Amino acid sequence: MNDFAIALVIHVLAVVLWIGGVSMVTTALLPAIRRDPDGSNPFALFAAVERRFARQARIATLLVGASGFYMVDRLGLWAGFASAAYWWLDAMVLVWLLFTLLLFIAEPLFLECWVRRRAARAPERTVLLVQRFHWVMLVLSLVAIAGGVASAHGLLF
Image (cartoon, rainbow, N blue to C red; front, side):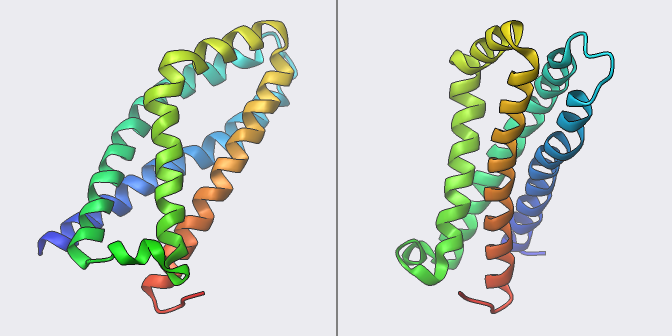
């Protein structure tokens, strides 16, 4: 197995773990929390799961970034960032950059505290806001992934 194949395996596995987790939180965990008949503290379970997943997501985004930039350099795709045909490269970097900023800067510096304070005042509305945000991030991620896979198999838009 060559270095590019190793980078690709690392990249795909890290994306699956990272975006798969985002999908589970968005489509299963948050809706279940919103429909909980007990509803005593709808945000507590989310916070506990999200805190554990954030560690995994941080590692995955580091692996995705390192392997992705390695593959771009190895394939000489830097010019692709200026080409409309390779829009998915820009989309992938945008998604990666947004998640990386959230996970490494916004969440530890202020976002976690802001969400916790908001949830103490309005837990149901906070869970809904968090769910909507997760949907936006999930859709952006899936569009970038679909574009990359389609392009890798000869379908350029």
